[in-house]
Length: 65
Image 1 (cartoon, rainbow, N blue to C red):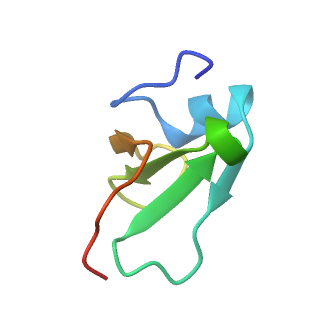
Image 2 (cartoon, rainbow, N blue to C red):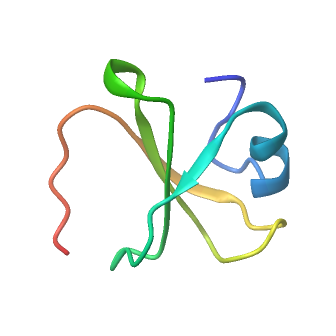
């Protein structure tokens, strides 16, 4: 979505899409992009604008929380 991939920084991702941080996630710096059928989830490696995306996922997932 909008050229975002694993390794993209938070600052660069925020420049092209609206990122919604998942509050109180037990998985770390979790976020989502898009809505409904176009929802993509992901994880940043750390807090801050220079943090890179570590993972992206879509569809049905099972995460232990």
